[in-house]
Amino acid sequence: MTDDQLAPVTAWWATAITRIQPGEIAFRGRPVQNLIGTTGFVDTIWLLVTGGDLAPARRHLLEATLVASVDHGPQAPSIASARMAATCGVGINSAMANGINVLGDTHGGAGQQCVAMLGRMVDAHREGAGNWDDLATDEIAQHRARGAFVPGFGHRFHPVDPRRDPLLALVEQAAASGDVVGDHLRAGLAIERALASRGVPMNIDGISAIVYGELGVEPELARGLFVLARSVGILAHAWEESRSGRRIKGPLPPPLLADYTGPAVSER
Image (cartoon, rainbow, N blue to C red; front, top):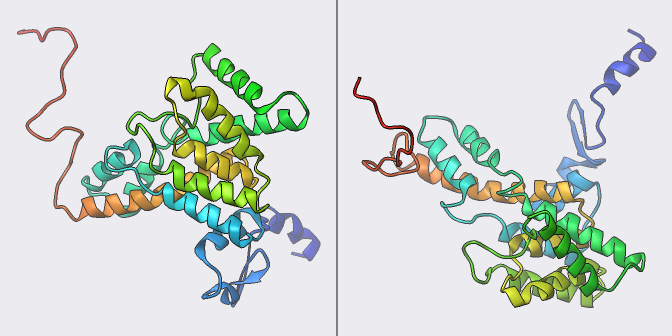
């Protein structure tokens, strides 16, 4: 085939991320051999996903957020799912996929939803649609009108999320030094103030959403970065469970059985 005939064929799977040629691997135009030993994993994530570089303060924010999100214990559905799968004879990759696939809109999606909410507030504020507190009140009212939780605030387990304060301090420091604009931070704090009388503080999804918003991460990509971080905990738990020797581990330890709530069992 001529070059002209091949052009639409090779364009079919075109990518701006990685160039592969015999003896060559380059990420976003940078030879892999130049990155190995000189570029950290967080910078490499950012390079591949966005094509850009991170200034030191912004890198520190992203890395801290990823660290804060790696795990939330075996009671988390994604972790429990991976642990159960690991006792069923599947490989580590299948156990991890099982846990990752449980991360949906309800378990794992609040960060994405919060990034979108804060983004709406930031856009409205920049357009002169109101001050931060009024915008927060409006957002909360809209969520309540449709019977929805305000994403990123409150926690079913922690009265105060231990991940909030250290991440918040880092964002405040970055905003004060001009490394981030600080508008998503102001929006998030306004929501927290509006919910303070109800005792609903910011959680990990809220503070993570602030970081991702300040870094310019789009809402759905923010969920992807959360999944990437949580996959570390999923791997750790799946590996631990696979070493335990247990087989076919279910949600209740034997000999306990789940309550039956159906019709009476017929004797016939």
